[in-house]
Amino acid sequence: MQQLDMSSDEFIKELEKTKKFTDKVNKQFGWVYNPNEDVNEGVIMGLARHKMLYGKRYCPCFMVIENEDGKHVSADNRTCPCPPAIEKEIPEDGKCHCGIFCTPEYASTHDQ
Image 1 (cartoon, rainbow, N blue to C red):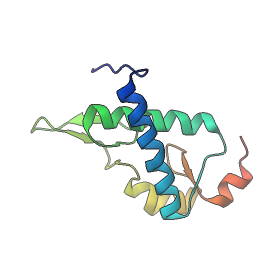
Image 2 (image 1 turned 120 degrees about the vertical axis):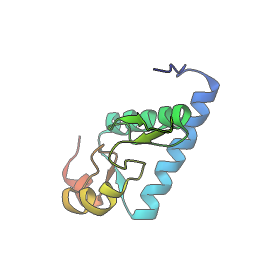
Image 3 (image 1 turned 90 degrees about the vertical axis):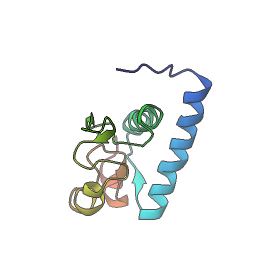
Image 4 (image 1 turned 45 degrees about the horizontal axis):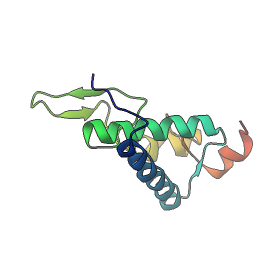
């Protein structure tokens, strides 16, 4: 497993880009962040880590596997924002599996 220096300038820059990315996703879909900041921080760090390691923001809550071609792919089609979250989890549960993206209604009734 590759190691990243999470205090490196490179990682911090990717973390900032990932935060802008998640801001944009929320705006695009009309979602909001989870009221629990620890959830958001952990998921954003995981997304940034996967972007640096694998070149894509794979959901950090799911496995990244190597296919027959030696390329990395997300198990269960989980590239953020993932189709299961957009199509099923958020409309039905009010939040995605990882918990970072929520409907405003979910967030207002689930304070930390």
